Image (cartoon, rainbow, N blue to C red; front, top):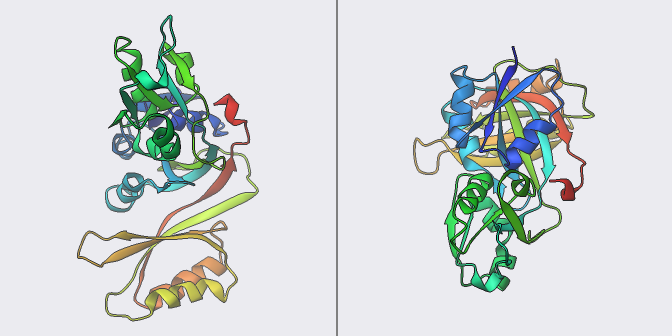
Amino acid sequence: MKTRLAFLGPHGTFTEEAARSLPIREEIAYQPYPNIIEVLTAVDKDEAEYGVVPLENSIEGTVNSTLDWLIHEVELPIVAEIALPISQHLVVARREQPLPLSSIRKILSHPHAVAQCHNFIKQHLPHAEIEYTNSTAMAAQIVSAHPEESWAAIGTRLSTRIYPLMFARQNIEDYDNNYTRFVLVGKQPPALPASPAEKTTILVTLPEDFPGALYQVLAAFAWRKINLSRIESRPTKKALGSYHFVIDIEQRMDEVLLPGAFAEIEALGCQVRQLGTYPLYVHNGSKESE
C-alpha cells in the first residue's frame, strides 16, 4: 500500500513540485487538497501520513496560515524541509491569436505570487483587476476553464502542461533570488537520505512579567555558540501584545547543547515547545524546469 502524502493543490502547484522533489524512500500516493488548513488537518486525522505546505518565501516572508495552524491547531512535527527556486509565469487560455497584455482584464493567482510580480504588474498590467485564489494552480484551472474571458493567471511552468494554457509572458517575478521553503509534516519521520544541513525549530513563550526575557533567551544560545537562522514573533491570540517566538536553530537536536539551552530558557519561566528537528534539502534544478 502506498504512503499517502497530502499537498496544497490542485495539481500543478509549486507545493506539488516540492513534494515530488523530496527524496522520500517510500512509494507515495500524492493527494491534492484545496488549502493549507485541509492539508494539515488531513495529516492530523490520519487521512494522510505526510503533508507538504509552504512555510516561507524569500521575498514575501512567512506563510502565516501554515505557521499559525502548526502552533495553535495541530501537534504535527516538521520532519523535513525543501527550499525550491520559484519562477512565476503569466499564462492565458490557449487561443488562435495570442492575447495581448493590453487586453487582459483580470489576473488570478495566490496572494504571494501576485506580490512577487508587483513590478511587472504595475508596469505592464496596471489596468487589470486582481483576484486572489488559494493556489497558483487553482488560478490556472479557472483561467483555462474560461477561454472566452480576457483573464490571465500567474503560476508555474507546469500549469501549461496540465491545463490548456499558453504563456503570455515568462519569468515575471521581480527578483531572481526567489525561493520558497516548504515543510514536510507527519506524526512519524519518513525514510530520508542524510542531508548536509539540518535544523531544529522551537516555539518559545515568554513570561509576561519578565523584562529582558527575550534577550536572555537569545543569550542561552549565544554563549553556547549555537547559530540561529530565524526568529519570528506570532501572536499567542490570548491578549494584545502577547507573542510566541519561533526560532530556527541550525543543527539537529543533540544530547547536550540544545537540551542545556532549553533548560536554561525554561528556568527563566519560559515555555519551550519543539516543532521539529529535521533535514534540509535544496532543490538545485533550473527555474526553467518548473
